[in-house]
Length: 217
View (cartoon, rainbow, N blue to C red):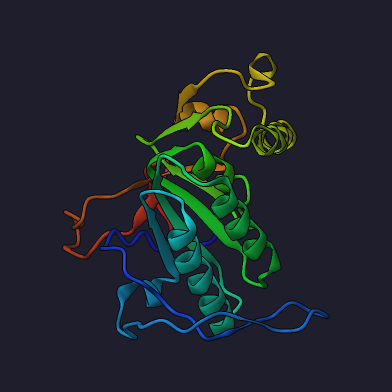
């Protein structure tokens, strides 16, 4: 069982200027950005999506994914605290995830809604959620109407094909909220996780995240 580094730290702009390995496709290059090689995210192969999905956050996340994939093929984790945002930003990140050699786990650490909930279904690794986290899904809104219609069609297809959400919810015409436990029941996630206490009372050593209350290594 793969171990996931749950690093709850401040969101920093991570890395760029690396080549994306795409098999027979030519290398894709992204613009370089400033980064701190000592950022704790690097060792944990972890990216934090905190806030709105938009072109800026999509650029940062994609740069981070490309950089980490260039280091090794080990799993990458995206920790999500987001109520959603731009459908194009979701699609951009989802498509880049599909080009990587590293599996990408998506973890709901508190709230995962709208386009961010769609991103959960793009995981090429595992779909995970903290026990007390919440999910929300709803039909797309905005303009132009034709673009919204296309987005809603894709959203309905993704949720219908990759989850066991109640069929009476589809096509989505309202907003639905559900807990992490319900998400597991609906096949929206693969597993529940929860953190242990920061320090072990038995050994005095730092604890590790656990799944269903049991430590994993």
